[in-house]
Amino acid sequence: RLYCYNFKGQIFYVDLQADSLVQLSSQFQRINALACDQAGQLLVAHAKGLSQYQEREATWIHHYQAALAEIPLVSSAQIGAEGQVSFITSKGIGRLYKGQIALIPSNLFQPVGAFILRAKGAQEFILSTYQNGLYSLENGQILAYPHQGLQALLKSRKVTNAVFLSDD
Image (cartoon, rainbow, N blue to C red; front, side, top):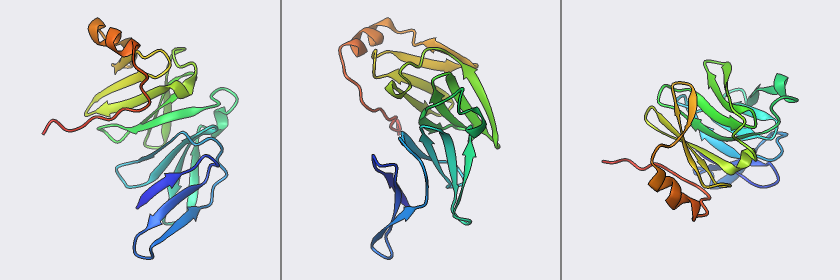
């Protein structure tokens, strides 16, 4: 299925057999990203956390709901090589793996919506669209990408999205 969302917080999928657009029932505000895990389940990063759609039951599982006061915004959800879901919050990088949430704390992500998290295999990178910097996530630490020439080149660009393509 092809999932999409709009600025009103509505989530749809395209039903190619019926040539139609089907709206999912949700109460999300300020959707920031959609991702799909290895099991083919839809994940939604939104203003109140991270939610996973259970297609068979047509229900949502909400992650991070207990910590709303502490982590008010989630953006840039990304599926890693081992099936973990990584996402950016105002408090650091969150990880959802086998139903459990862990946080790699950082005060770097202000404003939280100005960062893009991308993975290539086991490597994870964070791109700042606000300050145009590049960071890597290695062994549970967020590090400035060590190539200063690349950092300098990014400073003069307005990056709005990023994607890794296969080297094949």
